[in-house]
Amino acid sequence: MSLTRRRTAAALLALPLALSATPALAHGGGGGRPRPRTLHIAGDSTAAQKYADAAPETGWGMALPFFLGRALAVANHAVNGRSSKSFIDEGRLTALLDGVRPGDLVLIQFGHNDEKTEDPARGTDPYTTYQEYLRQYVKGARARRAEPVLITPVERRRFAEDGTARPTHGEYPAAMRALASEEGVTLLDAQALSLTRWQELGPDGTKPCFNWLEPGESPNYPDGVQDNTHFRPDGAVEVARMTARALLDGRVLAPRDLRRLGEPVPGAWITWPQA
Image (cartoon, rainbow, N blue to C red; front, side, top):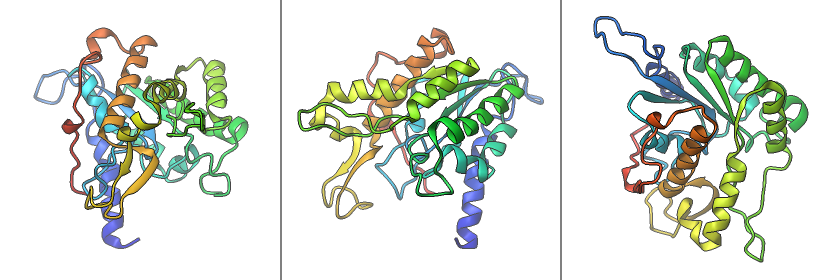
C-alpha cells in the first residue's frame, strides 16, 4: 500500500471517532448542549461506509441514520473484508472503544469473512475462535458502560431452483446466538430477518437490493456486476430498517429514539463521499 493510501486509510479509521467523542447527555465545552448517544458499528463490507468510487454499492450503516432520532449518532467503523479476528488484529476494536462513552451502543456484526477459513488472517471456527473474538467486543463495550448488541450476519442473495431463499452462513449465526444467550447480550437476528425478507421479495425482487448492474449502468462497473453479497441503496435501506425495528423490539431503543420505521425511505437519499 502506498504512503498516500496508508494516510487516507488512517484518516478514515479516525473519522468515526470524532462523531462519538462524548457521552450521552454530557454537555460540551462551552456549548452547553446535550450530545447524542452513539451507535458504534463494528462489522464488514455489508455495513461499511462506501465512497464514490464504489457507488452504487452501499453498506447498511450508511442508511441507519435515516431511522434514528436526532438524539442518536452513528459511528460506522465497519470495513470491507474484515472478520471478527482481523478487525481486532488490525487495532480497529481498540480505536472504536476509544470513542465509546457510557450509554452508547456497540453493534457487532461479523461472519461473512470469518467463514473464509482458508485465510489464516480472517478465518475463525464458529464455536471456538469466533466466539472468543466476539467476547472481546462484548467485554470492551461493557467495560466502558456501553451496551453491546450482537447482530448475526445478514444473508446473501441465494435461492434454490424452486425459489426458496437459502441460508449461506453455516454454523456462525447459531454460534453467535449461543454466545448471546451465554453472555446475556441482546441479539438482533439479521440472518433470520433478512432471509425472510429475501424470500418475500423472491429471486427477481431481490436484484434491486443487491449490487446487480448491467454493462454500462455505472461507470464504476463498466462491464456490469452480479454481486449477491453487497447492497445497492434499496437493499441497505431494507437492512437498516430491519435493524432499527429489531433494536426497538429488543427494547434496546425506545420509540422516541426512532423514526420512519413505517415510511418510505428513497434510495436516492444515499450519497457517496469522495474517498
